[in-house]
Length: 413
View 1 (tube, rainbow, N blue to C red):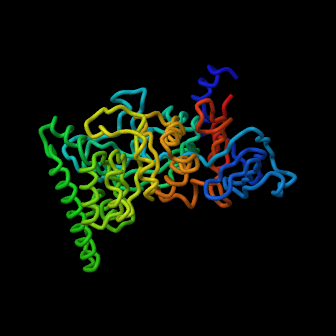
View 2 (tube, one colour; view 1 turned 45 degrees about the vertical axis):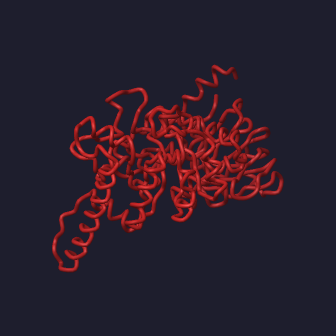
C-alpha cells in the first residue's frame, strides 16, 4: 500500500450503527508480539477473545484454541492494549466547524457552571473519532474547556460503539475546574469576576461551601420528611465533596498547582492534576497527597505564559519520583491520532519503552478508574487492543487495526 493510500485509510472507520454483531464465537490472533503491560511480553503470542472480553493471552502454541475459533495470523505485527487519552475535547470542540461545532465553553452569566455535562455536547460522528481509531486510541476522557472556574462534569467514552450512550463508560466522571490564565482572560474581557487568581480561588471555595450547605439542608429535609428543591450543579459538587468523583484541576504553572492542591486539601477532595506543565516543581506535595498527573499537551508551542516550561522532561522526573503519570494530546491541541508519538517523545527524553507504553495505557486507566476493564491485556478485561505493523513508537509504524469490545472498528485498507 502506498503512503498516500495509508493516509486516506486513516480517515475511515466502521460506521457507529453498522458494526457486525459477532455473538458467542471465539476469535484468536496468533503469532504477533503482544505487550500485555501488566504481565509478560510475548514475542510470538496469541490473544483469544469472545463476546467482547479477553479469554487468554499467552505464548503461541501453548494456548488451547478451539477448533471452531476464527484464527488470524499476526506474524510480524505488534499488539498493545487500546491506547487511552485521559484528557481531550474530542467531539465537543469539532475541528471542521467554527461556532457550529464549538460546545466546549459556556461563557455566559457565571464562571461557575457545575450543572453542565460534557456528554451533552459530544458529537460522536465527529471525524476525530475516526482519527482516534486510526491511531489505536480506544478510550478517551472528554471535558468541558477551561474558560470557567468550574466548567461542569467530564465523561469517559470509548471511541466507537453502536451509539453514544453505549460508548459511555462514565457520564459523570469528575468535576472540571480551571486555574490560571484562561478564566482570568475570558472574564477580564467581559469585565466580570474573576480577573485575578484570588478571585478564581474564592469562587471555587464559595461553590464548595455552598454545596456543603446544600447537602446539609437536603439531609435535614429528608430527616424531617420535607421536600427539598434539587439543584443539578450542587448535586454534582456534593458528589465531589463525598469523594465519589475527583476534581479535575486544570493548572499549568507551579503557583496555580499549589492553589489547586491547597483547596483540595481544605475540602478533602480527590484530585487529578490536568496539564501540569510545572508539576515537577511540586513532586513532594503530589506524592504526599497521592495526586496523579495527566501531563500535556507537550507537542505544543509556548502559546501562553503559563506554558513557558512546556516540554517532555517533566514526565521522566515525575515518573522517576513515583508520581502516577499519563499523557494527553488535549485534542485538538495535538490531534488525537498522535498519542503514540507523544509516548515516543518521552522515550527520546529518557523514559523507558515500557514506562512510555504505560503512560498511554494502564496509567490513564488507573487514573480514570477503569483499570478493571481496560488499560492492559488480561483475561476478563474488555477486548480493546491496537495492532501495529512495527514498533508503535517508531515514526515509520502504522496502526493497521483497532478493536473495541472484540470488534474490528478500524482497519487499514
